[in-house]
Image 1 (cartoon, rainbow, N blue to C red):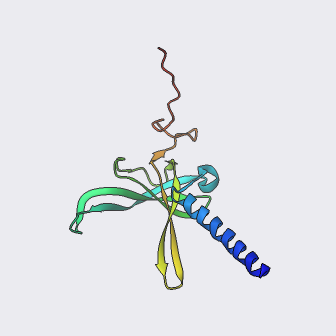
Image 2 (cartoon, helix red, strand yellow):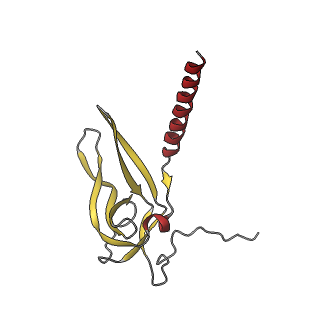
Image 3 (cartoon, one colour):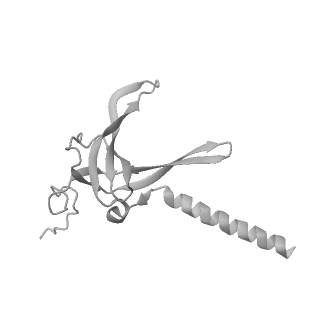
Amino acid sequence: MREVLLQKKTWKNIYNKILLKVMRLANGIIIDKEKTFGVLKFSALRREVHIQNEDGTVSEEIKERTYDLKCKEKGRMIQVSIPATVPLKEFDYNAEVEIINPIADTVATATFQGADVDWYIKADDIVLKNKNGQPAGNNHAPNNSQHKK
């Protein structure tokens, strides 16, 4: 009987750990850009996602754009989505870029054998890096100035 209780406790602990991890994923995973991606180079616009009308038809309004970026650290292309409120990016091919506030997230699709999980990366913006390796134009830096009264 004691062995059964220990097994129940163990499974409950495992379940709670998994549930906690799933809850943490609800807001995405914040990424250390330098360690995760290294040098990023612009490739091209991959796709535009349009908003769907109430009747199910696709509208002309764009929800987000996804770009292909060459990722030196991963040794392959990665796709990064940014909101459509950000102007269209038309950088030169292989221009060094930086992604602003990237977050990794997942979408799970149930299957007969469990689930398939797809990872994706969203960011606030993609900006060119200047010659010093810093973002060109400091539009996304926190404003630390204090107003005097």
